[in-house]
Image 1 (tube, helix red, strand yellow):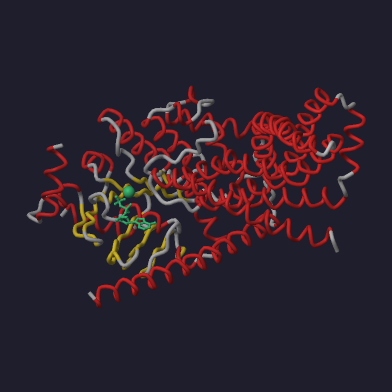
Image 2 (cartoon, chains in turn cyan, purple):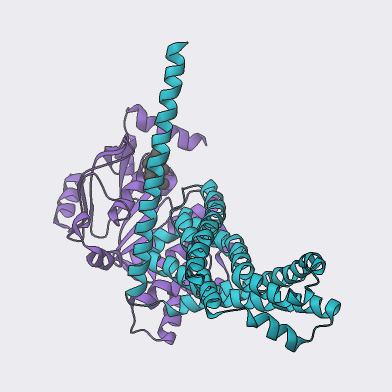
Length: 269
Length: 259
Ligand SMILES: Nc1ncnc2c1ncn2[C@@H]1O[C@H](COP(=O)(O)OP(=O)(O)O)[C@@H](O)[C@H]1O
Ligand SMILES: [Mg+2]
């Protein structure tokens, strides 16, 4: 009885130390992977064609879903915010409330989560199946650096495309909000823009751009790392795709929290 | 009398691949326990072994995709494990490698698959020259009509042949085939075997075929080497290898023909 419970505690301690070690190894491997990305990105020859191809695939293919989601969220958010403002007789604040919410928080986060799901899983599955079917090995022995050709191009492309997609998402979200306000409060476009943008500062825009770059990089690195290092076998591909999405979403939320703290420090400094 | 002559001819021929005492283990499990082999210029050596016996590991060591724990691998006078990245790249261009699953790039069509390494490694070629090289390579394997198809639209045998065309386009001196006939129907197997022999005669390549398929071994091999428990247990012509009472070899032989 006694020895059994003692054993259990021992096992518990043991697994915790394994978990801790795995976490540390994970951080270490990620750091190495990121350093390698920087090194290979800066070293010629540059894979311009592949980067453009990836930018196109990531950017254009994500437009429909980002359009729809952002537009609907713009409408819904406006609708849901109205009743509480009516209570204070402050519906004229709607445009600025919506602009602040969309530009500061919603557009970067929504775009990042959509891309984590769509592009992250895609990268994880694509590179994972290339690993499993030995295409990455084939590339390596035909004297092409597969890391440079597959990983750096994808990370760079999504990091570059993310700010553009966030800006696009913000525009469509604001459009949705405007249509709803115009329909209910008969606000003109000019007034909407004037009220809305009077509250947006340079800091807000900078912060959103920084956020989107960080999120894009996160999705790219997570997807590539999971796919590039996928386990052998078809199960490895599914695991890689799944882990890309789950891990990048998790990291994005943590980054969001940290970045908001830092921005607020500057905002009120 | 004849065998003595054969040996003296072989001795005179240059050795292009020389593997000595190679050991490799994964997570404490020994896969290769000291493999020795020699392949002479223009020769086709077949390495036979059950699946999981470390055949693929052996040829991946030869191109530096994996690194052995012990022993040396010498290819065309280069000690593979001692080469730096650049020298290794240079050597790899002289080696063709047919992967077990063909490993065609599925994001690219046949044309792009074939021209991929050509464009990257021979910068002086213009578009016409590349087109010509691709067409020639496809003609060699009899699949010109698939030029603009995607790998997903090809059958297993076609993929293998495109894989062969993709490595032949760089005119390698040495070819490593990883289970070229695995998973193919008997007629396609014969086609692939013929292709292996044709490539060898036409381009005078030195080749190593890894397989567990006896008909492929018999048909393409100048010399056979039997791998078991991580070491070479027998070496010689097809007749010599299977004229034995060793149960490991007898079993292998019997099961292959019962199937
Ligand atoms: N990269 C690797 N990591 C861990 N184990 C491996 C790796 N590659 C091969 N192995 C193991 O080595 C053994 C031999 O594999 P392989 O060479 O593929 O066999 P085969 O003779 O069928 O080609 C297998 O047990 C396999 O699990
Ligand atoms: Mg194998």
